[in-house]
Image 1 (cartoon, helix red, strand yellow):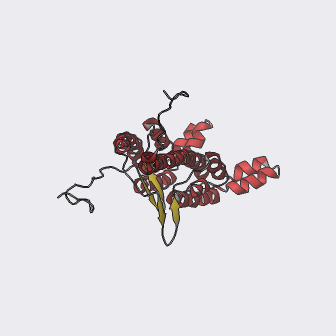
Image 2 (cartoon, one colour; image 1 turned 30 degrees about the horizontal axis):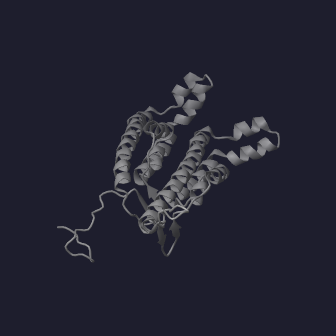
Image 3 (cartoon, helix red, strand yellow; image 1 turned 135 degrees about the vertical axis):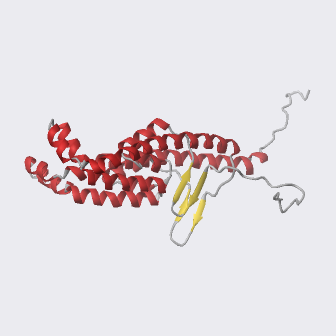
Length: 270
């Protein structure tokens, strides 16, 4: 069944097949070109991160939680620490192979699926970019107000350096921000990172090293790196999306009213 425009019932309305962005109270979700190898690399660094970069939130959260649970139960991070320090035999003894064998297939799936999804979304973006359909650029709801705007990528990076998740709040990615801030608290608390920092400032270097829990501390570098990278990339892409939407609006509403200058004549009237 075809849809028809209200002004001209005989003219079918344009059917939008693919939108390239959606602005909601919880954030701005958009399609843009991504390097599939970079997405796969983030999934290798921490399963779930590649999917979160693609805005595949449910799949990303599931893999993220799976990584923390299975990694902790298998003592994988302890094994990595002992392996890197040359204590191979201790690493073999401390690993729980019942959990470690479960870890391997899902880890590989996270890398493969994020790469595959990135390739598919790149194709979808090219189709949506050619269609260039209208999408909502402003929303006001009972909980939040969100709109397209230009932000500074450097500000997003600086806030993410202070606390992971603040950069996402700066660009209004609420779901990722709450997720990143929540796990920042968990990682810092159980790893005793802030206690180690305090001891380090007091000059107690050996005691600061001993107080750290490697199992939880090794989650933090990937978590920090992801928060910084995600906030920077999405700030840049949000700025591009704002310019694209503004350009389209000006062309459709003002370009047809361009001023037409009369033809020039010579001074002698010829």
